[in-house]
Length: 119
Length: 221
Image (tube, rainbow over all chains, first blue to last red; front, side, top):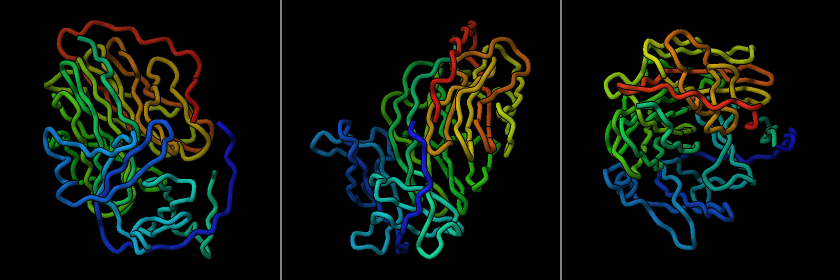
């Protein structure tokens, strides 16, 4: 693996305004991830026996679903290089993260909207 | 019947209160282990597979960032592709992974007590566990807070199965052989390590299956 380097990134703070459910699909070839919002009922149905798991066209394969935080961004999702605070922690979504991926750190690590990350 | 790995599912993540992913179980005398790793501020409130509630192992490990690691297990999980659902008590960063095994004792799947070591700078990171039946396997939840981590060494060496951001799930990928105390371990290159480990017992009539020879440590993260 290539050596990681410490980089300083500017990150924008977002706020949690609720919860909503989503399915995530990954393309086996490109590794591209697509997120599709779903209802609470559709999410809860995944827990039942013999579930009918979600599908997506274009060769994408379902990988996970979640009841996850709804944010105060335009689409309710993380923006590139944004973060939220949860208690003493911060969850950061970097521009290179795929949909649904993030890293966690102490919120005290973010100073003046800047954070050092190993990339 | 000897224990064998049936399948494992890579680490999935979310920031929220619930995470769902698929895992396929097969074979006979099955055991499913799910490992939720939950950030501070919440705890795992339940894990289900195919809507059946799983049982939490009695011991929880806490790492340098106050994440909690707890094994949840289910004897005789349904066969086929079904969903694991991890629920937590508040919105936090959640990771989840799981592995299923065949040839496991269906009455007492966990042999003896779980063991853990937290925040040690000694490599290998080691937990001594004592088996009272032959041919147990060990499973482990691990964390390395700096540097890299790799498979363990010696008779109790763990094979790292699912790794992301220097934490994850491991097992010994083979029988520990006769009864007695064994050092279950993985290696860290620097910093400190954490390990939560347990033994799983074979179903009646187990026959000794030698472990594959470990050659180097090709899985470096």
